[in-house]
Amino acid sequence: MKETVKTWTVLDILKVTEAAFRERGISNPRLNAELLLADTTGDSRINLYLNFEKPLTESEVSLYRDKVKRRLKFEPLQYIRGKTEFYSLEFNVTPDVLIPRQETEILVEKVLEYIKVSGLECPKILEIGTGSGCISIAIAANAECNIRAFDISNEAVKVAEINATANGTSDKIKFETVDFFDPGVTFEGYDIIVSNPPYISANDVPGLNEEVNGYEPYIALTDDGDGLSFYKRIFELYNVTQNKPFIFLEVGDGKKEAIVKLLSESSVNNYIIHNDLMNMPRVLEIKGTGNK
Ligand code: GLN
Image (tube, rainbow, N blue to C red; front, side):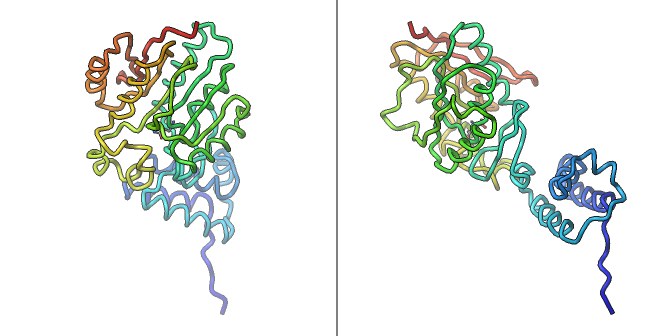
């Protein structure tokens, strides 16, 4: 006798997955279930809704199950999907890069605002720790500019290059594998420096959400110290630069006071800290003197 295999419809499988995700404490369980299923069947989410009664093929069910299992182990949705959105653009993401965060969009906004008011026609920009390339690519997609973006991870640089090409910005950005603490690094000749540095203290990493500390690259999260070493090095380089660039840095949660102290110890006074939409201090802007 032929064994009967259960036929799953779109609606049935979404309901079961949503319940499993909810029970596991995964936020937005229904949305997670829908996005993973839409990726599997190649449909849009709207089409899933229009085809609730549609039976899934056995291979669709098995592919979908694999993705659901990964999500139940708290692997981030963005790594399972292999993509995410940032500044209304699509980015490929792999476990070699930090998942772009919505709160980082304000960093891009501040740089774009400055480019506008500065009147610079094609500013020279340096990005430190580009990861997926999201910051540089979002800037390049919205302004004339010439960007050098580096990351210590060669794997990250490869992902960033793919993203730059996919978003039509590869002619404006040069990606390089560089260790920022290399003594050869200089800010000389740049109009703008931008970075979302690894600012989490090493001590805080074990207490992070499992989705973060279990999957995102350790070197993208922390400097393996107090979370301040990138800021410190950036202020040092700023001080020794002749024509000082404008600098835009993401401020880590709870790091404002420590950064302000470091600024004062480094005798950097010409700065302002912008809050984000949640009214959290998010972007440190250090004023430059410009390249005359
Ligand atoms: N620039 C990337 C981002 O903001 C990566 C930052 C990082 O790895 N610390 O998402």
